[in-house]
Amino acid sequence: MNESRPAVVVEDLTVVRGARTVLPGISLVVPPGQVVGLLGPSGGGKTTLLRAIVGVQVVRSGTVTVLGAPAGSAILRSRVGYVTQAPSVYTDLTVRENLDYFAALVGAAPGAAAEALAAVDLGSHVDALAGQLSGGQRSRVS
Image (cartoon, rainbow, N blue to C red):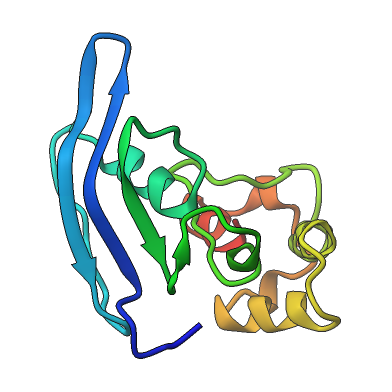
């Protein structure tokens, strides 16, 4: 995949749930290296758009391309991820155990969990139960 391509291209994306059109034919381009924020009211389609970008949302029409490949392609699974609004961690496991578990699930390279731990600055909490962390810290573990 060519890194000079746009990171994300959404073309005429329409998502419908029941009788409600959640995304009405939207288009956007996110250049590589850009940080983008999604703002809008509750129910405005922000999460639906993110789900379409990572390839887990059923769409009615349109296309979503991520790093030059169709959203949800197997080749993207090791390159694209997102954190949901609610932290996805096991509260009865330590920070280290959570990272090791999820690293194993995705087949991460040896040492990836330690790198992630350093990247989110939780080294001093590595042996703490995730359930004893603050909400922000749990989000970083997630």
